[in-house]
Amino acid sequence: MSKLFPYSTNRLHGLDHLRAIAIILVMVFHFGPGTPKWLQPVALIGWSGVDLFFVLSGYLIGYQLLSEVKTSNSISFKRFYLKRAFRIIPAYFTVLIVYYALPNLRGGRGMPPLWKFLTFTQNLGLDIETENTFSHAWSLCIEEQFYVIFPLILLTIGTLNFRKKVFYLITGLILLSIVLRLYSWSEYVQPLIDIDAKAMTFSFFEKIYYPSHTRMDGLVVGITIASMAAFDSKLLSRLKKHGNLIFLIGICMLLYAYKISENLVSFNTTAYGFTMISLAYGIILIAAISPTCFFYKIRSRITLVVATLSYSLYLTHKLIFNLTKRWIREFEITLLSDWIFWACFIAAGCVSLILYLLVEKPCLRLRKEVLTSDIAILTIHKKMIDK
Image (tube, rainbow, N blue to C red; front, side):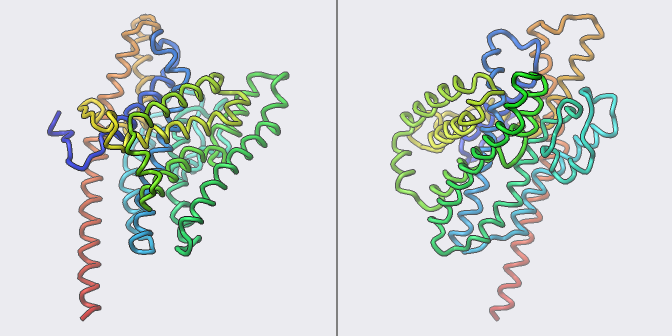
């Protein structure tokens, strides 16, 4: 196992822990009936795992781009999009092919048109009443849209007074997201509350939960922390000196946000629950990158493995849960037994490991070779010009 998942000297273990927590939250949330009783409180708030993923993506991608802007006043779009393409597309397309080539394995009530998956727009207008198969790809769509749009925004605002512009951008996006959620609530959800609870729930997911413009909070919080890190913020430096305290504050805020958002399909969650949860995860992320925090110092092979497999797990877990339950049902075994839960999780882990070893890892290795050769060519070209 140590050969497949080696520790690296520059690895931030705190981020591994957060990534592992995020995917476990999502998987427990998606498991449905049969979740062990002691995990049912986790299942209730498991949906927030995607918000943690958004915060992590906003931080990691934001830091990468903002650091490049700081050092060179530009962005290498070719390099950035190549890195994202090699990271995202191979495993995603592999799973997508399985869903479309083997429809008997799917489960669910139907899939959106293929073009929506290919263009990463499946989250827009997603009606889970009729198209809930592979519906969890909605969050991947939001991240892909972020990868496309954010570099262009940075290019547009220019480098003059860059820090001030980024601050205004971040504040504006969070406020816009809240306003758009409130508008969608009053226009599409609230009118259905006393008429049709089922229709109200579907409307909430379609108009508030899935769309990119109403779920910007996590990404923006991550970008905020990235901008503080990239531009050597004195505030971030002071916060990182008190890592354990920051972690405790983040956990307390998260628990309060969970309490507010106890009912996902609610006005509280719509108005401030999503934002508070993202802010809480952001505070915990600051602790996770603080050398003074215990969360930063802990090394765990388990979270390293889960974090490394998190993307493959995310893509495949619902399909594997469905197939495992279907296979067990043929033996007339009740699906409410705790061991069914663990069987499904082990099966999902095995399949994700196969996908990682056969698709993800080779493509990441190829990405490294392509980008290395690209840098070498650029260096030679520059030397020729200088001569």
